[in-house]
Image 1 (cartoon, rainbow, N blue to C red):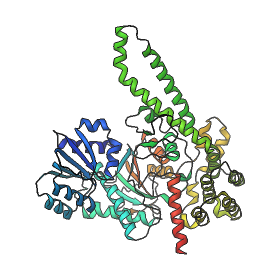
Image 2: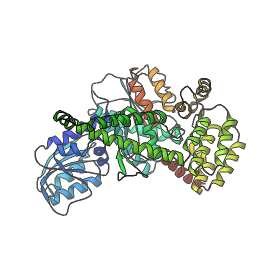
Image 3: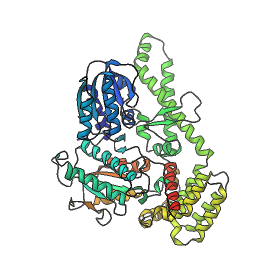
Image 4: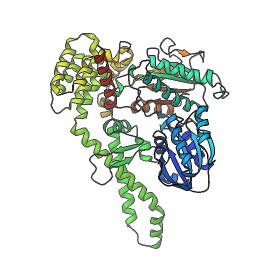
Length: 560
């Protein structure tokens, strides 16, 4: 049994396309499943599977294309069902093979059957993949839950979407786990209870995989339990790209590219350099790119020395790899150049040094002085000032308000919009009183003192990547069987009795970060007997997270 979520989904898609083998195919996708296919399948692979047309379900061609077989992969929603019915009534394609990403309600199947007047539906099947497999141990649901939770229709619909995504992952992996949730979060409780109801009460037979009781756990967490991690600047390759430029379905938009390549693909599945260096820090990354360029120059020089038929034959044999490496070199050099330019323009290293001192340091006065100096520096962008202020309030806001008041006063001079200022003023209400700052900063003081003892032995990594997310503490407690029932209670039966499980899904409502994904990947490689899959409603960064916080602050102010 694989724990590679990308491989599981790719196998599903191969099955869809091979079930209707022979003849040209049109791949019909909805607004969500097109994200799934784009991250696990290349254009070349689609052509190999005889897919010559990829269309969105919402777009119905004006003319009939009955020489195509339609392979439809969509979520089982009423909206998608209505579009499928319209397709069938108009008989756009010659044959239809319908695949749904989750459980299909009986009434939707009846509507589809009634619309199949031409009897062109050849197959209907559920293949469970209502999630986007970003990396082998990372998945996303690609939607914003928001940070507020209330028993409103909108919140209930969002909960249903989370339950659909997580339960489809469980079915694809063939897991029936013990289910736990973060006690301080009502939305985590609701999600956990709904998944338990589906797996243990509504569909127990579907989730009966004959497993050892206690081998599997699902733990539902809340992003607001650790608001520090998504506010920090990032200095490992994958996390840095998402923080500075943004990654969407493994694609990155370049803003300052000197050539015509404005969009590049970053996927660990087909880019060996990225796979090897996605968790490398900024300093090591620069050296790795230089080595990549040097290796390519050596190959390029060798290939210019064509003096015989044998030399020509050798070059032709190596040309595909040569061309591939040429594209890889250009891509990563362009990307690193773009990152470097933005880092310098925004003084992100200076900002990050202050962030790490606030979060990991033990000297409150030093942290305050650094923050105030940067708030007064016009070279520091207002958004970076806002993050610094929020981090300082998180760390020291409860220890007395004089310094916090001075930070707020300095921030008002930085031309921030009113929503951002409201966020700072109401930050205590926004993050809530349930956040345990002792746990958030549990290991940071010791680490900071230790880092000062070793000095510059580790260079930039020691200065800019001191912070460790709360998730690391949770992972450690899971490994040792010490995750407290009082803080993370079970829904239903408590098992395993010793609290230990070999396979764990950690799902963060409100979004997961690439920094947390790095620690999960490292834990999986450490061979300590624990296998972890990490997921979230979205993969967030500081811009998206602050926007969520601003929305809460606006709601809080409207309610008063």
